[in-house]
Image 1 (cartoon, helix red, strand yellow):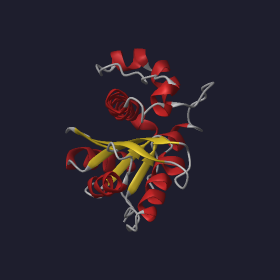
Image 2 (cartoon, rainbow, N blue to C red; image 1 turned 180 degrees about the vertical axis):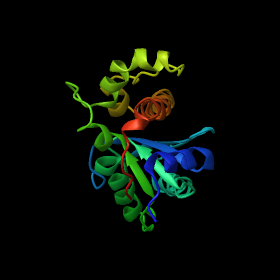
Image 3 (cartoon, rainbow, N blue to C red; image 1 turned 90 degrees about the horizontal axis):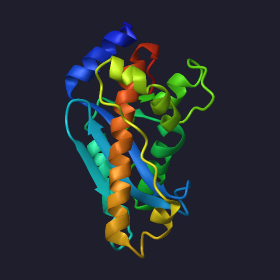
Image 4 (cartoon, rainbow, N blue to C red; image 1 turned 30 degrees about the vertical axis):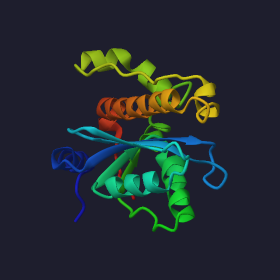
Length: 193
C-alpha cells in the first residue's frame, strides 16, 4: 500500500518523531576532519545539541548524536545525504560504532533543487528569498547565521567562545531548516531513505 506523501508528512508532524538535523564540522571529509557540533530539532519539541569537548575528540559526541537521531521516524536535512549523514557515519566508523540506522530522509536540497528556479540553491539564499512568505504564513522569519572562518580555525585557541558560536549556528540552522520545510512542504512529492 502506498500512502500519499502529504498525508504521511501530517503523520510525521503529529508523531513527535520527526527531526531536523544539521552539523558543523572541521573540513568536509571525515577522515581528516571531525564533527564539532550536531543539532537535532524535534518538529514540535526542543533542540538537542551535541558538541565536541575541550579534548577535541568527537567520540562521545558522535555516539550521542547517533542515539538521538535513531529515536526519529524521519529526518529532514539540507544536503544531508551528500554531507551530514556520510560525515556522521565516517566518524562513527572511526570510533568503531555501527553506522546510523536508516530512516526516511527528506533532504530539502534535493527536494527543491529541481522544483524551484532560483539563482542559488543554498539554505541561506532560499531563506532570504522566502522571508516575505514566512511572514505571510505567520512563521517566524529565520535567516542563516553567518560567522567568521576564524571561529573554526581558532576553536582550540578560544574554545569556550567559539564552541558557543558554533552551537548557536547549528541551532539556528535547524530552526531555519524547519521553516524552509514548512514554507515548501507542498513541493515534497517523495520520501526515500
